[in-house]
Image (cartoon, rainbow, N blue to C red; front, side, top):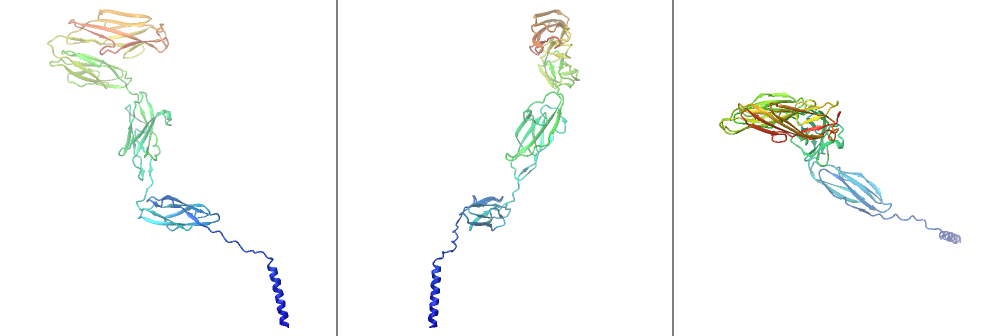
Length: 452
């Protein structure tokens, strides 16, 4: 009886429990998403001895985590050792001075294999600045186109072929609009040089220059700035440039002008020509040469005067007789020293200007000059035609006033001056010479307003 009662109680409790359970919701946790990864290969899996860098791309769903590791000491992950969803892994490969080698990256479960060739150690390329050699230190040069020389740039690594850029200026700041530039000068052996491609001016000055090297990819720094100086260069003129002599020989005078205070010398280059006076001097001056009698065929010789060549031509022996050589030079004693090709008609006070013409004629042999016939023509206010009858006047002169209209100007209008000279010697031989013809230079007057 008791057992029946217990069974009924258990049954009732079970029923109540089942009824209560039928009213409870399911509270189980949802399962995690399934992650898949896609790993790209780098642009290259093979590297040279110099090493390099690369990138691996990971593609994954949101919330999917991944890692990247290297299994080789020469491969380093520089960024992206771990990530979630899409991402990138960046790596570097060290230089290899040994044998070929292989390593790998493990990226999101994928193996990325890398190989590297061995080779000699790769040295970075550097270019040192060239060093100025000459002219430097403010030294004075004596040529109008000096040669600029640098010691070559010191290099490291495989720099390849080098060329140089030279810059030259009269300003130490090297302004872009105030420099001469020479590009792509090939490197020489030990030193590299460039010759200036234009003449320096005649006035004393200090000049500045520098240089740098390049292999076309990288350039060195400029060298330190070097300096040098130029003196007042000498510009001589000699007249006449050609002397004609008869077989009898004789003497000739060569005038030197335009040299300022510069020194000059004169020397014969032929045995039959002798410099009898003026073998050395300074500034304006003259040289006298003697030409020996010629007993053979015609001959030529030269004299070097103030760095310029004067040619002497002598005729063959013809059995006697004399010869005469006519010539003259213009002088402006009021404003210029030495021979000139123009007389300046100018004055601060209105006083007249005196223009002088001096004969340089001479005879060859024993004859002497017995007369000079002069004609001078020019235009100033009116046409002037001045004539000196044959006489012993080896020097003539004429005067003019400044500021005469309509030709005078502030900067000195130029008017041709025509001079003709005929000389006669004691044997009756004559010679005529005209300005602007033969060895005689063209002459002119400069017509200034007074005080200009």
